[in-house]
Amino acid sequence: MKLWLDGGLQDIESARVSVFDHGLTVGDGIFETVKAVDGRPFALTRHLDRLTRSARGLGLPEPDHDEVRRACAAVLEANPMPLGRLRITYTGGHGPLGSDRGEHGPTLVVALGETLRRPDSTAVITVPWTRNERGALTGLKTTSYAENVVALARAHQHGATEALFGNTVGQLCEGTGSNVFVVLDGEIHTPPVASGCLAGITRALTVEWTGAKESDLPLDVLERADEVFLTSTLRDVQAVHRVDDRELPGTPGPVTAKAMRIFAERSGDDLDP
Ligand code: PLP
Image (cartoon, rainbow, N blue to C red):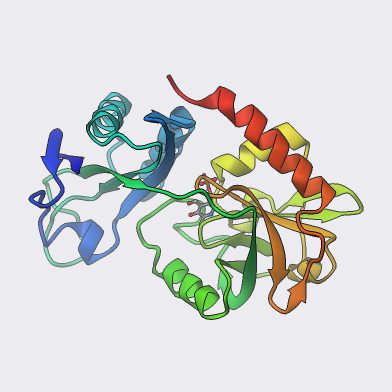
């Protein structure tokens, strides 16, 4: 397997970054996960735009989109696979032991992993920890993901594949790596970006293609929603058949099934050449 580092392809086994890279020592980095179908990245332009927004938010130099595109193309060509996930990682680079950035400039790594199609439905839990809708990192896709790692581990302990967070004012927010949608009286709703969730690319496409509304939703909406589903790069649209102890029989419900169908049909058009 080959990845991209320091301006070119390298073998994964021998590629090295500094042990003082700020991505490692203080989580000073950003990332994107991009789906690749038969060697073609999905919605790469949207991912690059979000990478730039995350870089601005963290005060990192803006990534060179041409270089990242070249890196993605090279990695995809070197590692052919039917369904993959490109992982673009961009960190503050190596620096002194502490939180000040060094003078060395950012580290860019682009790697590819194989991925499996997710099942059509899944179980989720809610967690008692809150997303801070006004934090310095809110809405940025940073490598400071330990909170998500902890919540996801708890989900796995409960036989679920995702954990949902509320925010500090008790509204539904998002999952550890997905956005959440609910169906109420036949209408689809998802929390607004102001709730503290990541502006998911799958979320944006789903809102555009299904007419879902962005609404402030109390966390307990999950106790009465007719249907619940998740969106993410690796899940696409995925129905939820259990939230904590609440079973949702007949999953996927009709509205979710339609959203899944629309997404599958329309997303074929958005593969970058
Ligand atoms: N929310 C979080 C915290 C995420 O990490 C992700 C994706 O990784 C999402 C939502 C979904 O975003 P996207 O659809 O762009 O994959």
